[in-house]
Amino acid sequence: MEPILNADLHCHSVVSDGTLTPEVLAARAKANGVQLWALTDHDEIGGQARAMAAAKALELPYLTGTEISITFAGHTVHIVGLGFDHTHPELLQGLRSTRGGRQERAQEMSAGLAQVGIHGAYEGALQYVGNPELISRTHFARHLVETGVCKDTSEVFRKYLTENKPGFVPHRWASLQNAVQWITQAGGVAVIAHPARYGLSANEEYALFSEFKAHGGQAVEVVTGSHSSADAVQYAGTALEFGLAASRGSDFHSPDESHTDLGSLPFLPGQLTPVWELLTDRIQ
Ligand code: AMP
Ligand code: MN
Ligand code: MN
Ligand code: MN
Image 1 (cartoon, helix red, strand yellow):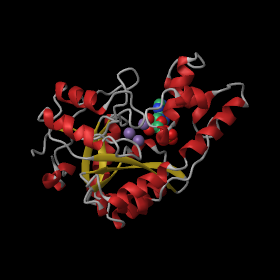
Image 2 (cartoon, rainbow, N blue to C red):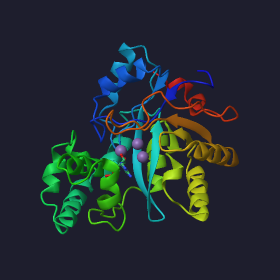
Image 3 (spheres, protein in one colour):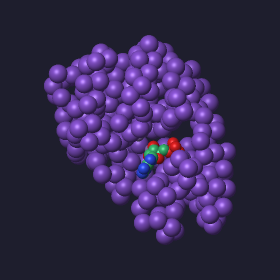
């Protein structure tokens, strides 16, 4: 694999909170010129066999993927895993355990929304859910847009689903150490997803990167649909500072909601080690 590659190593299907099937995503990636693809559903690898088969039929090189939610210093942070064995029992069990709290949390979110006059949000969100174990804030957001409470999903997040808002329920996800270990024990590479999104202080961010490295994490997303070009420059520097490889991914969820389509990002800055150089023997 070349260092300059239209790799897209971050997106979501109906198996988590995307709106397209793994097969439709594979076709879209191929049509958009993606040269190496990974489907990274939240806390779930149930779509991997389908994504892999669809990519193979299209002769699109593929890496297995997932995006694990963790709690770090009181913040929710996402760790992407790439190139693991998607049948590895400890990875499967770890992901199952971290999905476990979502239904209860969703009921609490619904109760919070009911207190501000929005009733039946749990049942409404469920209508958008492809995988009942993976009910997420995104499904609530789609329901509140569809019922006219807000004009788009970002307004829902801003008014209802983020910290100190009525539908927000703090949740205890997996630990950083667990997530990195599940991925690496299954033969994959752990990647800090979209670091600019977390609002961490400089000290918290230093702790995140240092502890991630100490647990065996090897890469960071530099070019992503969630980063500005200034963020990409900043985290290219962080990758070099911490000796991490760099990843690239759109974080595409839906043609109606996502600003960045599959395969449409700028290339990685040249001086970085692309994460796929660590994974050449894992590409299918
Ligand atoms: P959850 O895992 O249930 O906490 O939901 C998190 C998901 O919500 C993320 O993966 C994004 O897809 C989506 N999300 C988070 N923040 C926003 C936002 N400000 N606007 C739109 N979608 C968001
Ligand atoms: Mn999502
Ligand atoms: Mn994420
Ligand atoms: Mn994502």
